[in-house]
Image 1 (tube, rainbow, N blue to C red):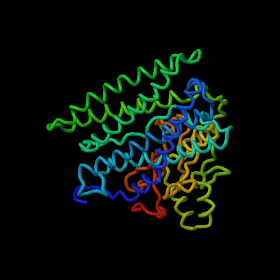
Image 2: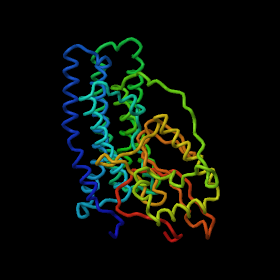
Image 3: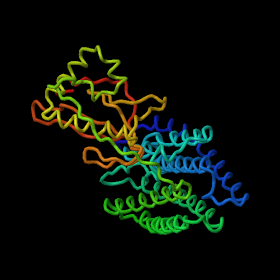
Length: 386
């Protein structure tokens, strides 16, 4: 507590839930061996098999990175095992929370040959957003280096399997060249930071340099593994109809619940405090038209398949805990909202709040990103203090 560390109880549960990925990864490697024995080039594997291999790769890398961060801190500070620096906790959580969704995609592909991961999410996906701090703990950086070494070795194995399979199918030779061009500099980057990690005089600037280099290398490895397994097809695009204008507070048809998750609106529809909170929100909004325009663009992204509702571990749609109780979404394809470029698998929600508008004129209208965690709290924000 004196160090500002946070308990890792929930994170440990998340880690344990994802450990099945290691057996899944071994099974995937065995499938690749069998494919080679049949004389089939990996790029010509069935769509179902490629989906299994890709989803398992993504889950594996995320589990390795999440666990490396936890174990690296425990090894460095065994007396505080069970507690983590906030940056380590948040980064590990961001990785481990995505493991099960990728394993679920793998299971779906095995049971449903019609499932097409290319249509489900834009590939290749990036690693979860990196948590940025002024100074990274040394053990955090050492854990990143450990993870990069392990993931890099696995990426090399995947690339080697493609290289030994012989001449790639017509038109796909550039995939191999591109992968080689990504692995080599990533390997060089990881090797270059090892002496820096052993420097006893490292300060904030050095730690930031090391963090950036390791993060870039991990991203390169993660992407290479996907590119060697993904289908090169691009999903058919449909023409977007664009945002649909939503009625404002003084217009016929206005719905003060339009920002609220449907299941929450159904539950709180008769709640007088909720009605009062929403009425206050719209009354204090200095530009409702701007708020509604942002919501309309978000709904258009949902219709276009770029954004979908995010589900909690029980498969239920999530929502924010405070008025107006906005839905939590997950990005399927890169989208820009409120001036922010949101990458695939990013969880986000639209935060609209009167804040301290009555005292300072501050009104909040922004996109906030996750990952989010559960809470039993329900906030109405009937006063500025809330």
